[in-house]
Length: 419
Image (cartoon, rainbow, N blue to C red; front, side, top):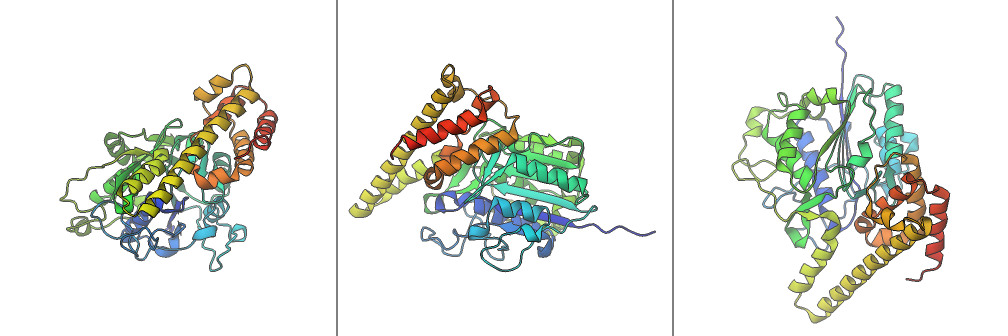
């Protein structure tokens, strides 16, 4: 009898850049070390990360990235399949669907994609900022509409047997809550569609080392036998540990009964009992500290830098940057008020305060992209904060306000303002 061969494919992507967002790349580096240690061949793993953290000027230990205080360096050996400008939503989707021609690799080099087939499994992990219906990359956006369209097409083309998606960002539930229940895809989000996600472990250079969700799912993977542990077991463990946001499950719930090793490989028992694992040692009590909503991280980091800086000139420069950031946030808030009021004169206040469910995914992409291209400088300055206001657009078009009107108002408000 012929035995059908299958492969395990893994796609890991950190969508951010910059020292303030250290945690996203640290999460992905840690995830890579875990699956690599579990025996997944590097040719079946694709990693996307900006790669500006290990040798950042702010890093007190150049060449090191840690994901937990006192933990090991998770940077050595990490694959650098896509870095810098090549870390994009467009490339992410092309890699996922195995489309080498669709990859736009400005940095040159091989165009690694998932060459998965009908008998193979795919595991995806994403870590960054997000909003309702979108996940941020450095220069563009991954929209729920495009992610779902890609997954559905891959399912129809039999490009996988089963797929699991883990996504860590604010409002991450909104990215996968519309996963079909009748295809072989299961997803877990770090938060429900209306919640922010939290950073944790404020340590190195006054930045945050990890995301709350990643800390717990990676910890769990390294302390249990993955050949005997299901995704449901992991979900229950993570849910029981998290306090900052609410993890959610979506898609085909039958897949949560599968063993994690079917997707992520497994280490042997001796390896799991080694003195120090990737989460700082099995014998050390593992507790998360400094839980902080993601969009609050930049301001808190500035405050601490100002307080600890002794050089008068550097302190003054930091204070000016802090004031500029607070002004930008005030301008963003004021602008969203104007857009809501002018788009829906009768009920503008409702659009600011409500949290309507997102059902019109393509409309979200249409409006959010128009806003991003109109206010480009804000997305470059304070992406996490501006994304926390995207619910205003959802409330507007889900309440019946025409998309064309919302876009017209966005353009009008921008042309009448000077920043």
